[in-house]
Length: 216
Image (cartoon, rainbow, N blue to C red):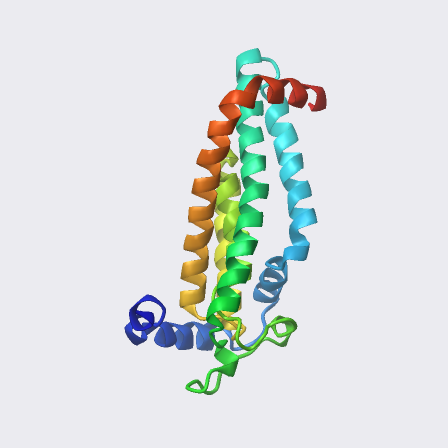
């Protein structure tokens, strides 16, 4: 099963070599920045930006009571989904890393001449390749926030997610399979969490709206 689901019948290493050699020729500022942005410590900054976006998004509908209350409900669901999904993602990723212990590319016996970004090595345990915590983290945020983002912000989010994913391959610490499965894990976690939160919010909506009105 691993041969097909993780190794992709050999294409996992082939894709890694092509991406790593193409993007890893030198430690570019863009990929190095993307790599740092994918660490969990960036969340306070990211969440602050989300809350600013949320504030002005709700404020823009204040002239219409109906739209105002709808926007409050949607944002309440989105923010709770975001926080809950991140917790679920962290638990799942941590358990999988401990359970499978796949070697990272720079520790893999069958790979030579790998381009490695030294900035990505701190904390990169040799046998914790699968899945990619960076990718799961950024994808969870993007998927959870997706319904509330306009086209411009969505494009920025996609660009950052792709950049972070590529930076992990270019830096020599993750395989394409790690990236693919991390994104899928994030998507499943967000979808299940959102449907659960929506079901709960049907009962709590009036109270939540009253509380959010006091904030905004």
